[in-house]
Image 1: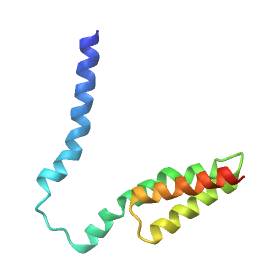
Image 2 (image 1 turned 135 degrees about the vertical axis):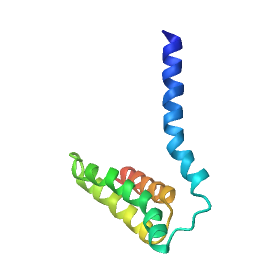
Image 3 (image 1 turned 90 degrees about the horizontal axis):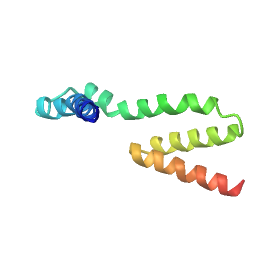
Image 4 (image 1 turned 90 degrees about the vertical axis):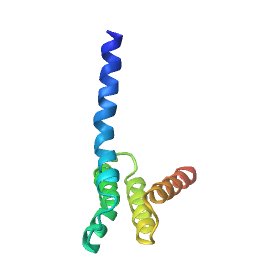
Length: 101
C-alpha cells in the first residue's frame, strides 16, 4: 500500500513539474511581441485578483478588513510593486489594522 502512495506522489510531482518546465526549456529563446509579453507579465496580478476579490465580499465580521486589504493591494500594484511585495504590503496593512482595532 505504501508503495502505491509513493508512486502516486511521484506521479503527481512529475505531472505538475512538466507544465512548469516546458515553457522554460522550449520557449526560452522565443521572442514574443510586446503585446504578449505585457499580457503574460500581468497574469500573476490577474490570478491574484481572481483569488482575492471573491473573499472580500464574503467577510462577515468586518467588511472594512476586506476593503482595506483590497485597497492596499491595488495601491501597491499601481505603484509598481511585484506580486510578492503586493501580498506582503497587504498583510502588513491588515496586521496594523488588526492591532489598532
